[in-house]
Image (cartoon, rainbow, N blue to C red; front, side, top):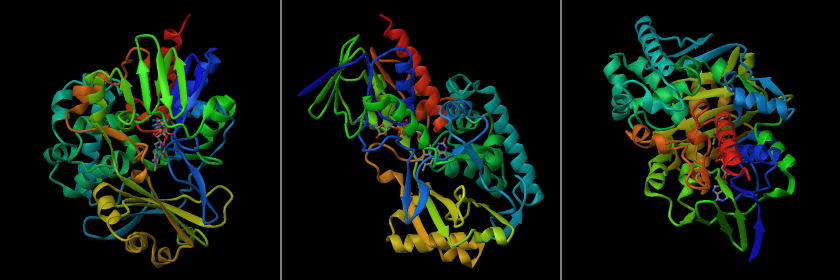
Length: 452
Ligand SMILES: Cc1cc2nc3c(=O)[nH]c(=O)nc-3n(C[C@H](O)[C@H](O)[C@H](O)COP(=O)(O)OP(=O)(O)OC[C@H]3O[C@@H](n4cnc5c(N)ncnc54)[C@H](O)[C@@H]3O)c2cc1C
């Protein structure tokens, strides 16, 4: 058995764990970061597939994400604007394909009026919510008891308005069917990005990308931390008292004054605690679950849609690929589309043989962009739900009633142990911005706790 002794042991080398570790080292604490995978970054991962550089996990940065923007600045990372010249495509309830510019979907006037009304209502609720304390919103209990789907059904009789508003939060963000999470959880998703209007505005929410990929953030942080980041160390056990922990992984044992368990809530149960986690803390994590989304990367000889005056942006709650964007890399001549298949549609196509799934995806893209979409150079699916370390996509959220029942527990320390990831963020919830905010909050608490 090898034994090491540090001030703080950090488990998980995603954006949360590495940013916390970095702040702790800056504050003079000795730190060890233990990561189960053979790479850093967790849900941020750039890789080369068929000769194309792909961002398999998170990639976009929006102007409200100030914690992330500050970090990019500190790390000297540059960004570039997502390609968005030309017309976007929408396929409506009647199956009709329409092209449009701007953010307003080209729907019938009565549908547009209802979408505007729903947007205004969701914006009002989001503005009244403190995303760090959604359970304190006036009427939170009631909103947490109804599904987002039934709330929308109560609000409007226009199915296309309902389906589009549902899409922006269900398929596009929480990646769960709208009948499986509460209206309060939906409002939190909106509040975490500043407003619902921000979420539906792809110009805003998917504004920029990082040159070299968003995984550069954890990679640069790990580079600065040096050899205190250990890969391939899957933490199995944590023994703890009121002021110390011993973390065990294979033949390594680390003693510390505090633990930062920077893993998604679903990965907490993979660790054995001695004594066990208090029941309330354990239950809180058991009631959070990941959504389901397949991120598709399809590369062509050229970005052919641009020649047709299209931006590569496409939406439809009625299509298998509910949203798609031009994801051509910085300085690249080939054209790449990124698309997403979410929740129930993802369940259905994942049950099919890979060739059938690919054919259905390409058919869907052809309905947006024409027959050339059927002839890619390369096709790749990032399927995060097959990942064992609790890293589904994009993040985890509560079931009905969970936010008011367990939310207040989320950020409580358990003795010397602090558990967090982007899944418990307020602002930046489920995003890298949220991971960095949680990392900074935890680091502040641990610095206070370990003042000698
Ligand atoms: C497909 C996809 C697209 C996304 N798109 C965007 C986007 O465009 N913009 C954006 O901002 N965000 C996006 N996100 C979300 C964003 O990537 C995450 O919110 C963020 O990266 C989470 O960081 P984290 O450190 O909190 O958690 P994670 O990245 O999940 O890190 C947790 C780490 O803990 C490790 N771990 C778990 N258990 C153990 C253990 N027992 N011992 C040791 N290590 C352990 C894991 O291996 C992992 O490395 C996307 C995510 C996905 C998957």
